[in-house]
Amino acid sequence: MFEAMGGDTSGPEWRDACIAYFQRGLGAGQLAGVVVDAESGALAACGVIEFVDRIPSPRNPTGRWAYISTISTDPEHRRQGLATAVMEGLLHLAHARQLHVVELHATDEGRPLYERLGFRPRDGAWEMALRIVYPPP
Ligand SMILES: CC(C)(COP(=O)(O)OP(=O)(O)OC[C@H]1O[C@@H](n2cnc3c(N)ncnc32)[C@H](O)[C@@H]1OP(=O)(O)O)[C@@H](O)C(=O)NCCC(=O)NCCS
Image (tube, rainbow, N blue to C red; front, side, top):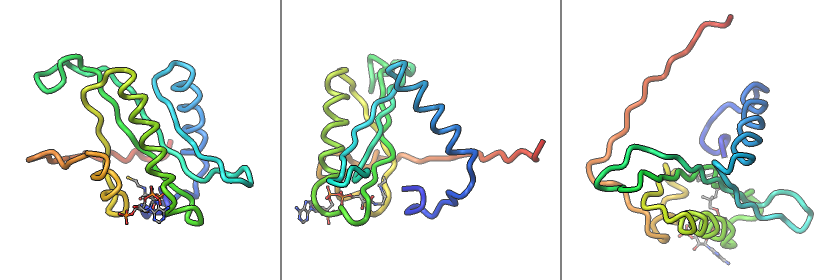
């Protein structure tokens, strides 16, 4: 998925940190994944949902919130409904926790899929980020 988004996936640091993050998060129930195995046993499609408690608000009175990411289907298994199935599995987990708000960031490729499932761009939503790059130790 990161490659499809134009990211440089070559370095080992992010992979190690990512594995540790998943081990912690899965163990603590703070995140869950849905995977589809190919017949060969390789990964065909996957997606992740992270559960976060945020400040309760009028829009989200419980403050319980989830973020879906890492929706990705291996190129040779695309257009067979696998990402849709992954999303439905993730949304089932959100419903089971009675979440009011589930968010994601869509690539152009993913947008039609999310729209079919009811996701809409938030009116007036804007996003800003500060990227801080530290010098090597
Ligand atoms: C976006 C992505 C996840 C979609 O995965 P996918 O498994 O192909 O998704 P689906 O099969 O559920 O749906 C994709 C399309 O196939 C169609 N489709 C589903 N089942 C089908 C079938 N049996 N036969 C033909 N078409 C089918 C869907 O209607 C959909 O059409 P549309 O998007 O043109 O309207 C995949 O292209 C991908 O990994 N892209 C790179 C990473 C990325 O951008 N991820 C999204 C991050 S937000």
